[in-house]
Image (cartoon, rainbow over all chains, first blue to last red; front, side, top):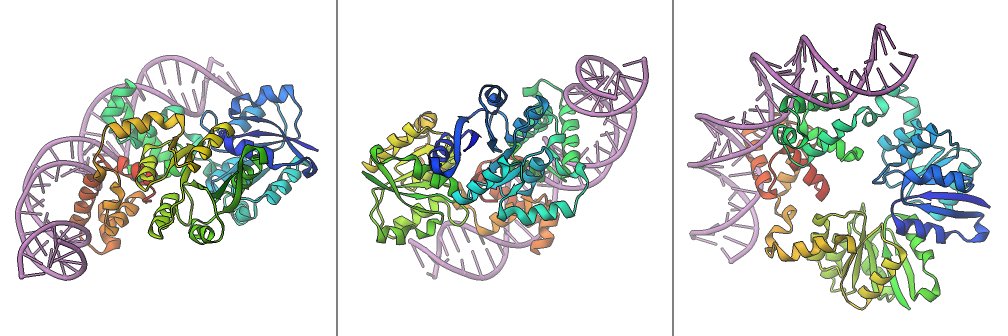
Length: 212
Length: 212
DNA sequence: TTCACGATACCACTTTAGAGGTATCAGCCA
DNA sequence: TGGCTGATACCTCTAAAGTGGTATCGTGAA
């Protein structure tokens, strides 16, 4: 019996997956948490063979939880679970050391296979994203290109959020209690880091990446 | 026993929800489809008491399915199921006649209550969005404000797409073989129609609405 | 057949964004 | 300690966006 911890902010999804596995499937979701920050304390209390983790979550995202685990020396194989069939997410995941990647539109059979493999510390990639993985491994050996988002500071993400709401530099300066010059400097740095030409591209990029 | 049809492109979620309901819950997911276009033919084959429908789906979105059902005179109560705690989605849903709205981070108990109510043709709104609903009903009795997106012409949507790619007015003019002046006029009209202040807000609004 | 509307185009003007710099200061890590 | 980085701030200048108009032309609906 493979004991799994499920980390997902969507209660329905979590409970659904839990009740999907019957005893003879060889898999049991022993615990569900909707807050990734709880993962370390849960791992200290109960023993699990692998973690099924959603990538996009409000308090701390899946990649954040992976990093948190790493920093605490917790070494449990992780299968990332997400809706985003998006190379940008997959890159971030691979770079932080997830064991596998599966889409939420996978079937039960695929999920079962993925959980089994990951619990044995084998890699699993959902067929739909395999090609993207190969492309990734072939091209771009340059890690600096991969996780553009991680290069952003919290302040910069905050600024992006304001821009997305339609605020101009002056308005942002007022709510953040900083100078308009500073806001403009931040905007410039952000655009340079993300490699975008203008505000429009910045916003569409940021929304795709999930920064907003 | 309430017989429900589930429309969701995420197989795992669907199978999860299906196996979550035991016979004594009084609810049975009798059919799952990942393609909303199949709903009319399914309804002609099997009888269901209500439909559980995801809003954001690739081929045809939840609102599209509702409209499709309406056009075919199919009258089955629909509970919309989504991750978006976003008034913009809720408006579209209500305007096309959904019976209820529940978030994917709801609990099983909440989902059960929602399904029961909707199957009896009562309205259900997830507690988290109740306040938003009330605000909506209080203000804005003006239906023309609701579906801003529909007011956009195809040309205007095309322009929005270009802006989202980071193109400026000049570049857009070149690829569309029109004058830069014309592009600027379109931008102005678009922003006026959508009620946004600047490009940043235009893009974030458009991406939320799914125009891009 | 008017009439409304979308697509097109132009002018003049103000505001904002964007790009080129430079610089200080606090915190963190080797 | 010394270097790196993020947050802050300022200056200058150009390019672009945004705002105020007006106007023609075709198409499809009333």
